[in-house]
Length: 173
Image 1 (tube, rainbow, N blue to C red):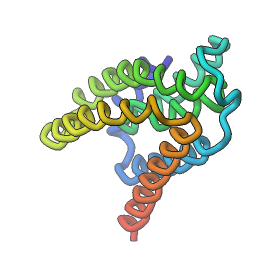
Image 2 (image 1 turned 120 degrees about the horizontal axis):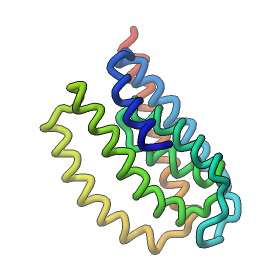
Image 3 (image 1 turned 90 degrees about the vertical axis):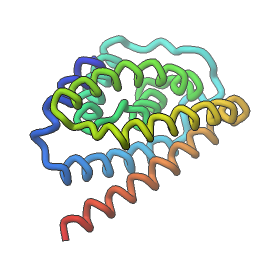
């Protein structure tokens, strides 16, 4: 569900005005921040939980369509959704997310490229910075309690959502 829906969302996103996409991204980021801040079901548990395949498919397809349209791999939405909706332990959700986002991002990237929505210079600069940052972040993740990881995700995503929302509102006036 996630990968094909990401491709479809990215292909159709050029039909949606930029301000609408930015406003949706802001709203979803704030919602994801709130969801990430909530206590995780079964906090402290490790290993995968039994997930109903239909639930995973529906969640993946829904988030894939939205994230593909927004040009997101989906990490900021997938992690809180896997924890709260699918009841997957925090560390398992964070690890599983990496594979899911890789596949979702590749599909979304193909769709965005085919519709001319990728500014190559900034995209490559951010990719290099993100690769370095991910290595540093993974070192801290192993030593950090799951609830602190969720709170860090909540704060960062929430602040980005607020900044996007302010930018969207300012652009309309």
